[in-house]
Image 1 (cartoon, rainbow, N blue to C red):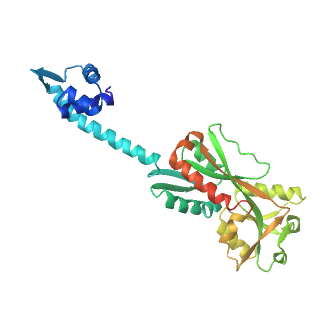
Image 2: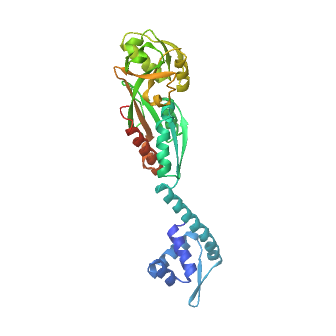
Image 3: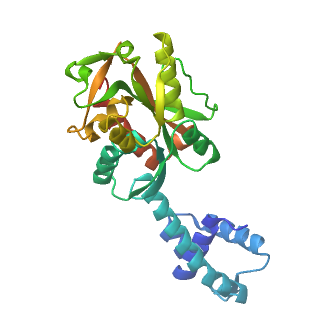
Length: 301
């Protein structure tokens, strides 16, 4: 194996024409240059220079090494420039997996800010609901995953995965316009015991069943879908009501449906998950910073 320092010194000797000239150029002592060249010749296994009178000439092996040194140093310089680009956030790629309501709200805001601050960073956006999205992180399919939990539900994550808490998202009830309870600012969940319900993803459905059980009733679930636009359409047609996160409210077609705060207040917790080692990767850290920033403006919504 060749030492890159020896290759650089060798190249300096070849271009400068002597050990002493290379030493002056590099800021070394001449004995230091001599020692490095001896070490390189030991690594090569054959002399690279021959002395003719007071001058030094390259051997055939030395001429070959000189040609290779140009390519080696060029590749090293290119690699150094590329690494500087990563550390200075001029480039990088981050795979972000989010659930639908986050991908429609938090993520676009965060990526817009990221594009202004660090236009060289590319984000590949994926979609998945927890816990499947966390499995994708464990498999290495993404670098950051966004997931939500409900009170009483603890997310089991490996020790090597870090949780970055982002925000709490208030839960609301989605009602069709004209519903008798739509005139209220807040709706008690118990008042919806006789309604037909549209459930969301498995985790949201489990929370709905839990919240209703706490109040002594079982919701009549007639449809189940994790597509927020489909939920909105079903509610708008008067086919049921739905428990929805506040993140979804800005995307509602208010001419057909309305969202009302649930009483007593209920919230879900939104976090980003990332392998601890990836926290030191500048591009990943930059995406997390932007997610924290846009989430801070929504805390308590």
